Length: 182
Image (tube, rainbow, N blue to C red; front, side):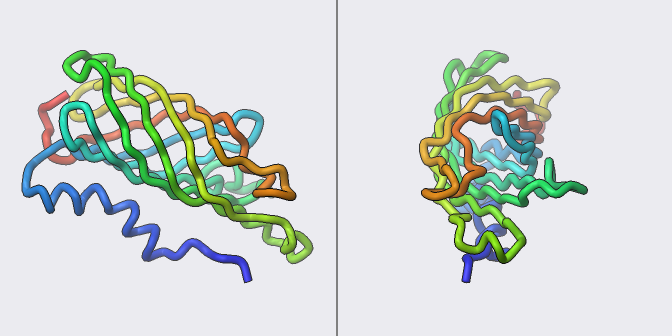
């Protein structure tokens, strides 16, 4: 039997930054929003993103993206889910245009739906690096764009055949606590 993403685990991973915020008892920046991601030569995968600032330069995040909210909506594209956590380092935090690097780890699952594909690998750990820019459009709204590389991919025999290496993303987030900070 193939493993399924458990709703409780997904919810806990997405709420992880909120737990950090309440544990610190401080009103540090928590950005929550939507993420639009495209894998090069493959699917659009969209979803939710949250990032919590540990300091001026360091942040942790939790993200869920799925082709169910992208290419697989109303089509026969393969339904695939990505759930991952991240750690990011921001350069030039006092400037408007802020470069960053981000490391992600998590879990990938493709739902091939038909029993004929049950012998194909459909799950994989995720490990990727991203680099990009973030810009406060009008506080508390931010836009973030990046290019990333999945270190673990598949070819259909060793790992899922729809897990490609290069992706790019665009996120729009809203700062939940510090409404006036950039």
